[in-house]
Length: 158
Image 1 (cartoon, rainbow, N blue to C red):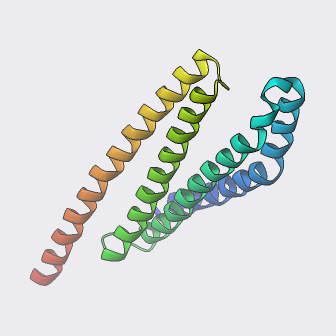
Image 2: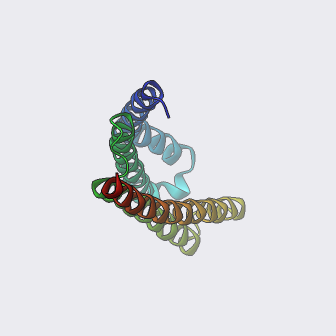
């Protein structure tokens, strides 16, 4: 990856994080109000669902922050370092927390009868995709650990 591409992706991560912040502060509360007005039978669930969505978006923001840091390490050619692994762990933790939030929210919606069957199926699909992403990051973390060890070995030889 070139330094220019890494910096461009850092800008994309920052803009995405700002967009998510706007969604947390403005969009979610406003849209949840509209939904409560449109579906008064579910108005009682407005803030429970809004808060879980805001927390989920915070997990994505944490992932973007860690990705921004890793992109900076790529641009500085410092990616094969033990400190990079900590940022990958932040990504795993944030994705895992977001997955748990989605799981608990989906289960709560189903138990409370707040969602239609097609919404439940969509949430299950999202949970499966999220689990696949988490597993992929676990594999890539293992590759980073191995590549870091090989770099340390090569640096000792050279």
